[in-house]
Amino acid sequence: MIVVIASENERKLVEELGYDKYPVVVTGIGAINVIKSLKNISKDEQIVNIGYCGSNHLPIGEKVVVGISTLLHELFEYQEQPNKTIDYPNSKIVCYTSTDFVIKTNIKDPCVFDMELAFICSMFDKVKSIKVVSDNLDLHSYEQCIED
Image (cartoon, rainbow, N blue to C red; front, side, top):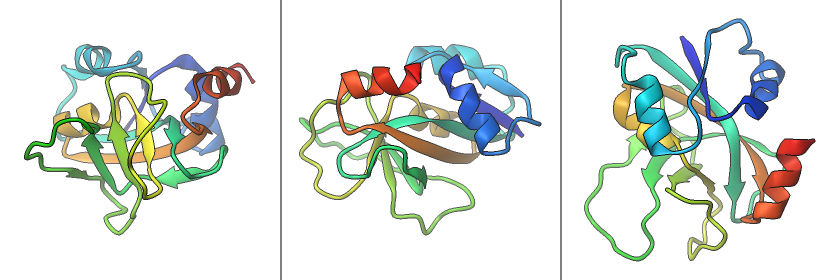
């Protein structure tokens, strides 16, 4: 098992959630960093992705286990197979991965947003993701959260 986080400031979440006995890979934020950091790891490795996320409706500080991961594309719809995460196939929480910080959305159902999970799920067969809501689509709130 390998724990994957996007930035060093998420390491405290790894400890809080009890995953600090496992190796941790810090990828950097975004798709290119994820791909470069994880490309040499076996696709059969179990990955636990832990990190901060934004949310349209969930309160700041709430911990969620993601059930479905997909890319965010609100302007143009195309056929895409969403990724189900392991261990929690009944979780209704959808994580939308974007290539930029999300500051608004037309999505009405409670969900979370990040910049890595869909890319991680596309590379590995066994992925679990635990996210902590850092903001409600507000960059300033996110920056404050990671400073604390």
